[in-house]
Length: 272
Image (cartoon, rainbow, N blue to C red; front, top):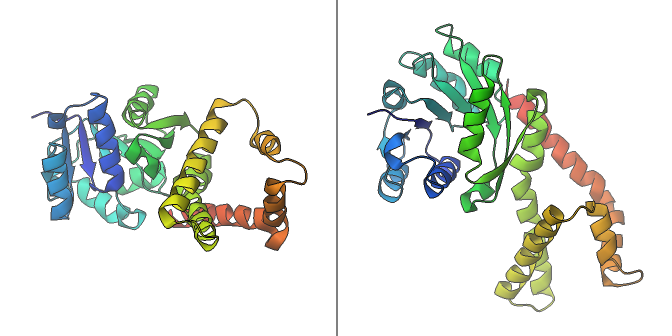
């Protein structure tokens, strides 16, 4: 059987990508093969998604898929690539979503069997609900057609942009890790709401829908975030009272900048 997409590491992000592909009918289940060491993940891919789920990476490589998605932890990449190179056809398009791992790193660890074509992608977890963000860049041997193929895969569940590879660490820090920043903000909004007497379900709905609606406004408006903030902030009103605390106490903006810079630095560290 000819497979279009092979997957190494059938985790949550790989699941989100596959669900998007199947939902949009870009690929059929019988065009996808996935490997994972976890029996639970293999069962999910097989039973819920109808995908051929196998135990070893070598089985995926031997199936010679047109594209191979590397959906594994950065720390595992060198070992996985070295073993994959034994069976992987040199014309396979490699798509990596591992944070910090450069296209040159992937090419180097696969060895000299061919001019390996690599596309790096940094997606984020909102792909699970079809609302993700992904940034793409191509390695030195990848073609514009390769980039278009990767875009086709990720556009099923995400907005997609192209960036130079030199900016992928910044992308990782802003959007790849970004959902966690938002979830942390919502945690604190819920906690504050319940401290003030709201029920937990009501506080959660109020906070989550406020975040969702605000994001929709950002995407729909030509105004800058600063201008949208000004429009909702009446002089001497409740919003101004809250923002004055956020902007002054313990220098919150600088703290957020340092946090994103730390994520960028860690992404670079993961590349070794």
